[in-house]
Image 1: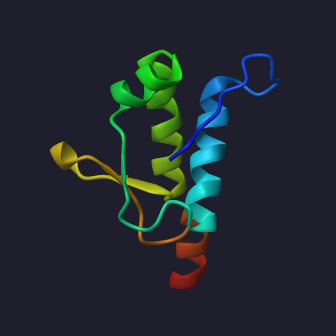
Image 2 (image 1 turned 90 degrees about the vertical axis):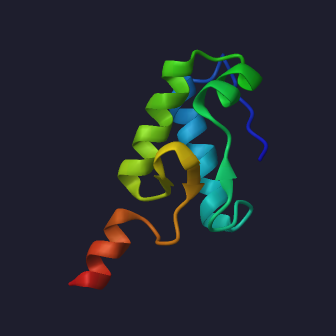
Length: 90
C-alpha cells in the first residue's frame, strides 16, 4: 500500500488518506481481506498524527470500505460501499 500526503493540497490529510485507501480498494490494488497497517504504524510512516489516521479509518469503516476485527486488525471489506449494500438489500 502506497500513500502520498501533500501538505500543500487543499484537501486535509485525513481526507487524502481516506480517498487514497478507498480508491486502491475499489480498483483492486488492495484486495479484499488485505490487512491494513495499524493506525499508529501508518501515522508514523506518513508523518501524521495518529488521530488523523484514526479519523480516516473511521470514515472508511462508515463507508463500508474497511472493517475492524477487534484485536485482529483492520482489513479491506468484502462488500462494496454501504450504499451498494443497501441497494442490493432493497
